[in-house]
View 1 (spheres, helix red, strand yellow):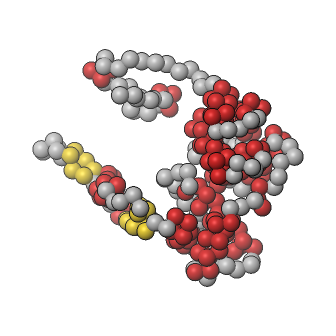
View 2 (view 1 turned 120 degrees about the horizontal axis):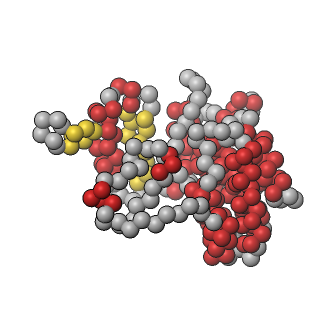
View 3 (view 1 turned 90 degrees about the vertical axis):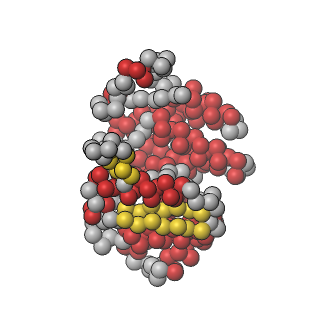
Length: 268
């Protein structure tokens, strides 16, 4: 049994009970060596320039953390770096003849670009050009299958306009579909009637087109339920656990076959 904790977050779950602590051996990690980790993962994925690329990635994330604004959802630490390395490894195996710098820059954009605010977006792109000079414009290098699936989805919902708003909406849809390839939980943030639900429907259709998996959607309004009804509670009379609506739906979705995509949508 391995337990990982981040006590500096100040969470109430940071302190383990004494009877559980006595059964575990404590290993303290002060700070991960991101350069060594990136170099090993890149070398294992077949990158010949793993040393220089790892050094650039380490410095890039350090500068991004200091340069961009402080947002609660930003993550420029080890978790984000590992996602970039995994995306780069997948790109290396899919396109072994493609330039290594192109693969890494594309992985950086796919993992991070969707979470940036409108003010931080040009700063992030500028940092990429600084640390990876002379690299290609990866905005124009797209997977043909993904482009075709996005076009089919937008045409199905009659959203294939050429106005500025339609182009920006399609760009956000592409970011969402790309993010869904490496994350299982996302949050769509925007004002009322900005197209969040429609964008999610387009993303679902795109995923079905790309993967061919049947989609199963579970919808609920989280504002209509209390936290106890949503996540569950401990019955004060019997001390039995009463399962909530969200946890029960999650359990049901996990029992489905692997060839089905389960979507748990909290739309309220």
